[in-house]
Image 1 (cartoon, rainbow, N blue to C red):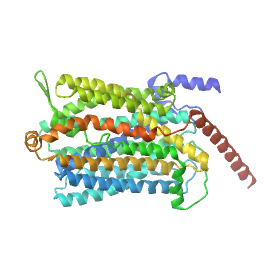
Image 2 (cartoon, helix red, strand yellow; image 1 turned 180 degrees about the horizontal axis):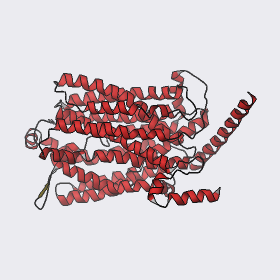
Image 3 (cartoon, rainbow, N blue to C red; image 1 turned 180 degrees about the vertical axis):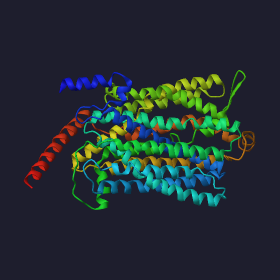
Image 4 (cartoon, one colour; image 1 turned 120 degrees about the horizontal axis):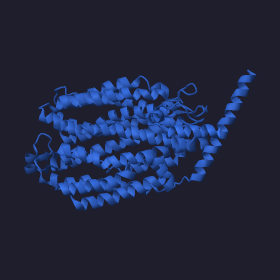
Length: 500
């Protein structure tokens, strides 16, 4: 057995093509080919989520020309709907009857096509007045989110079922977050495409329809690859109880509660989309070349994330060096606070200043890009902890609560963004020169909003997060006892089947 495992490890480290398409793995681990399909599916799904999450506000203000305050309210309302339906979806998934190995798979194969079509429709300009546009937007969005909630809970929840081993789930989390980051990253080319489209006189309406089809529908087609995954955690049959008791079982998962609370209180991080700073406040001259705001945002996003993205490949090794995923998050948040405060003092007005800021933010991105990996690894551990404590696995409700928190966070951010832009008298119909005449305070506020708000978010995140107490020794005990418990359950099931 030891020689066989060494052969598997050597194959993993060899030819990169064989690495990604290797179908061998020791018992309880995930073959790389399956993991590659899973990560690619997450890349597609996150391209879809990325365009909705990052660009729907801009689409409403600058394409549909809605009032920013109205946009903040309707997008906030839509995200509240997201938040409310997620725990219901999670409980439905946990309560439904399913065959062993088929708890989450039914939601991974067909829903993506529906979600992709609805995403494309979200970015259609139907030529309606503001009231009509709001009504159509809300109808499409409510349908989009309900279907998306089932897929999203199943996609991420599969991570806790794909292996019974915490260390292997950490490896899976690493590659899934690389895939998710790639999906979000590809959406980052939109500012550059907007700059090209502007030079070619392509209207924003036509541009965003194309983006909705390519990133929304195309991304969801890729996400169908998740259906190739296998659920390796033993089937756990739990006693039936009321719907509300299923929800109340969350109280046993203190790790999850503190992790979600940390995310909620950090809503300042990313509350104002980058485009409102770069498009209106930045323009640089490099010789005879003019770098406009959209191009500056594209270059900034690429440069500050290149090292952070590479660091994700070493997240599990980095976590071992630091003593666990919890310490990875603490380091990331502290680094983000320090680097942003220094960057704010440097400024952005000249090409030299923004270059120094990019270099500094690249350093901060190295641990910061590992936060998603660490959070989901801790979330999987919390599902094991609840099963160890209560005898019931709660992938559905646990991952739906993560989704709820993410969407509630987006709701708060959108509402906050609408209020801030309205307070600063922003109007998407005005040119930069016109906006400067109407609202000079808009331009004064953008640099601190862009650089210091995320630092405040990181500081607030640490307050509840530092209260999480789950040692490596306790985690090892939980994993060991669950494996023993599952083995006994399997033996009893075999004996019962033999007797009948």
